Length: 113
Image (cartoon, rainbow, N blue to C red; front, side):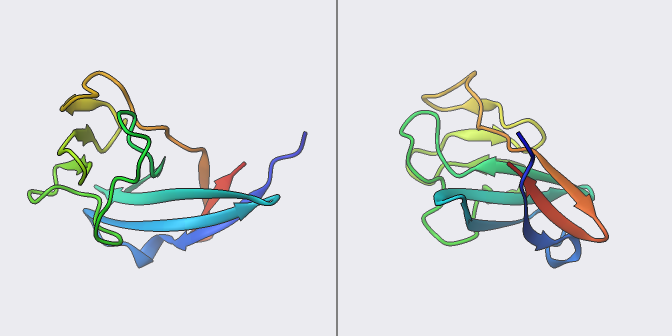
């Protein structure tokens, strides 16, 4: 089975501690995801809380808490570490966001499906 690459965003489009939500269509399947940039690193997660399976953001592209230290579920305030998606506070503590495979090539971030 071959890997499908879908362009998500340009690396420079996000600033440090910035996030962006995206909807990607892959072979008639819709994926709702978000991208976070922290310390020049990119992280890509499915936009789904492990507790409710609902989206994490109420405001588009707003996935971080007020201090920009954690990814936050706007529904119930669960906090997830940016670097690995692990929940450290809230009803889904010790569960994780679903990280998605990606690569960066020539300044572009691609989802690998």
